[in-house]
Length: 608
Image (cartoon, rainbow, N blue to C red; front, side):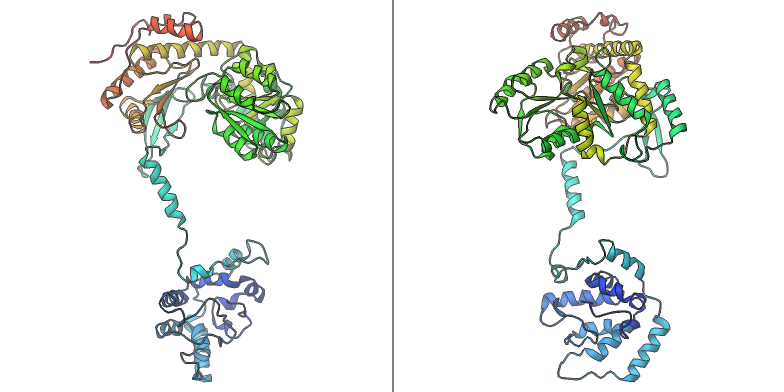
C-alpha cells in the first residue's frame, strides 16, 4: 500500500513523521504503516470513514487492492465525507488536492500557488507535531526479522470483518471458574522462622493500607519445619556470601557448583541408587524424564495410575507415546492392561508412593512384581514421602526396603526438606541419559548454589538420628490429630500417611469453611477443589507438623466444630480415641502408644 513512499519523495517530505524515515525503512515497513496511520488524528478519521463507507458501498471508496502510487493517481474516487479529513493534513492536502478527484473525467485544480502555500503550512505550524516516533515504528517493524515484514492489517480487518477478541475470551474463562466455585484466590502469608507454624496473613485489598493478623497454619507442605531449621538457614547465608544469589547459567554453562555435585551424591545415597540429577522442581523432573523416555524409546507404552500428579500426566502426554490408564492402586486392572502387550515391548509403569490429596499408599512391592513379570520399567514419585519415611529419609520405598526393585525414583526438595527443587535418582546410565537428552534439564538455569547448600544440609539432617527423632514426633502428632477428629465427629478420611483429608463434598461450602476458620478463629487450612480433586470430593487438606502443640490441636478441633455447625455441614458419629486407635492399628499398623497424649486424655465434646 505504501510501497512507493519514501522520505526522498517530495510528497512524503511534507509529512513530519514520514520525512524522518530512511528510504530503507520505508521499503521494509510495508503495510504495517497502516497501524500507525490509524492512530494519527487525521489519518485515523480518514481510515475509519473509509471503512464505514466500504461496508455501505464497496465500489465507492478505497479498496484493499488499490495501490497508492507516488502521485496517488490510481485512486480516483473519494467520498465527500472524507474531504475534510484530507484537507486537515498538510501532507494529504497536497497529495489528494493534485491527484485525486471525485470525477475521473475532470482534471485536478491544484496549482503551484497551492503547493507553495502547503509547503509554508507544513514547515510552519504543523512541522514536528506528528505524534509518532519513527524509531518506535522502526523497532516494531523489524523486530520479527529484517526482510520479513508482516501485514499487520489484513484485508479482513480493513473490511470490518469480526476478529477474535482475546480479552473477552480470557474474561469468559475466568467467569466460568467463578461460577463453579473453583476460582482460586491466593492468601498472602508472612511466615516467621521463630514462630512456625504461626504466621501472619496479609490483607492487601486496600492498596493504601495492609492489615496483618496472626494465624496458625494447618496446610503447609513444609511438613517438618525444615525451612526454619537454624543449620539450614546458616548454610544458605554462608553460600550466599561465597557464591552470590544465582547460579549464573545452566548446568552446562558455568552453573554447576560443588554444592550441586554433593547434593546429587547425597540424594543418590538416601535412595540406594548410583546417581541422581537435580532439577528446578519435581514438576520439571517428572515431566522432563517421562517425556524424554517416551520420545527416545521406540514403541514405548506408559501405564499410568489414574490419580497421578499433573506433572506425570503432562510428561506422558508430551511424549506422544501410547498410554494405558489403570484404576488407582488396582493391581488387577494394571495386570490386565500389561498383558495386552508383548513382553518384549518397552513399558513404563508410572505411579506415586503417597497420593498428595487422599494420602493413600501404592502397593509398591506388588507393582514391582508385575513390572518384573511383564518386563516393565518402574517410575515412582516419592514427592510426599521423601524426608518423612525410611531410615535415611528416602520415602516409602526406603522404609519398606524396596529401593533396589525400583528403576526411577523422583522427589521434591520443597516439602519435607524445606527448600526448593526436584530430582531423579536411578542407575548411572539412566541419569546420564536424562542429563544429556532431557530438554527441561538442559535448557533451564541451574539451581542457585545457596539453594543447593541449604538442601544438602537439610537432606543430611534428615538422614541422621535427629531426622529419625523428628519423623517419630511427626507420626505421633498426625495420629493424635486424626483420633481427635474422629472423637469430635469431624469427617476425617482414614489414611495411613501424614495427610488428613477432611471431607466436605461441596466447593462453595468448602471455600466458606476455609474462610470462616481464618476470619473467626485465626486458623488457615486451604480448601481443595476442582481440578486438584474431582467434583464432589472437595476437602480441607490438613497437615500436622511436629511443631503443632496440643493446645493448637484442641483449638483447631473446636474451631472445626463451630464452623461445621454454622454452615450446616454433616458430622460423623463420634469415635472415642481408644477405639479409633484400635481400628487404625488393624488397618495400618501399631500406634506405639502415641494415644497417651495429655490432650487426648480430655476428649472434646460436640456442642449442642
